[in-house]
Length: 362
Image (tube, rainbow, N blue to C red; front, side, top):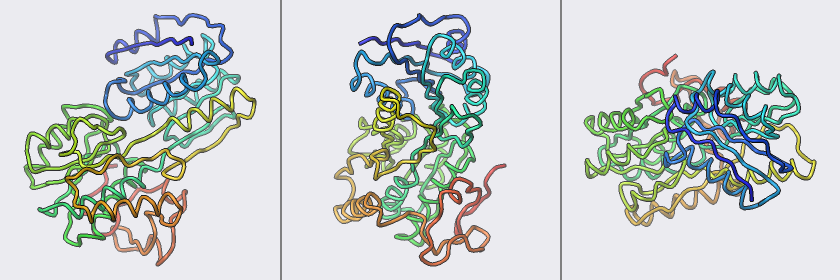
């Protein structure tokens, strides 16, 4: 098996690698590139994409060469990295962060024979651009249920990255399912405007704990919130993007695992057998792309059983976390009784649901 890695331990290193370190030409029939927003050792989002890359290598062996660049900032640096990969023979490039959207489409226009895939994006400006996503809100429904049952203070925290639909629907799903089992629950949201910054994430967790939060959820990538919960004592949390098993059995009492391996293996196989087409993919529990990690003994048995029943119902297509009646924060109707949200409604979500306090930043 041939493998090539481009390592960057900081934004500056990523930029330098993109601009000054040429990639060697390869003889392999298919070269697949991965562009990562964080370090492969972040323990969360990027770590899970890296596991997907490794799954591709394990599945296809010498038929595929994989390359990757870690810690690539969103913006011009990402565009330079993707350009360099394309110039040096990449056939397929996975860009794994929302903020790469402009760069993906710009580079795709210049390299029509290269296939580009953008994670969590919505723009496919060219026939060689595909978008792919996971239904994270399914996992947040499950942890919202557990959080609502387990909080003693009725205050649950949510460390939010950026005010985009993916994050807003996660907040709403968490709140709706916590509220359903605990009418007194309050969801405290702190926006940190980063995907991965352990210091900011830790500060947000500590601020929440000072406000009486005893359950912390997050839409950021590091283990810092769980570390803060561990230091505080009496506070629980959940693994985000990866299992974060080092914090079992508490404060990490369960986790939402993004398993990209099935998708990456499928798409590379399609490249190899000639069946690859432009798509807009949004997989979840039924596809094995959203997985709830071990629910530990810190969770009461009856709560664990309820969570497992919800997982089974979502996986079987019998339950959708956004099923009416659901109102918007201003009291207007979002979904009528029994109505299920469409993908278009979810992907444009820009409001809190009824009962949430505070405003979404513009």
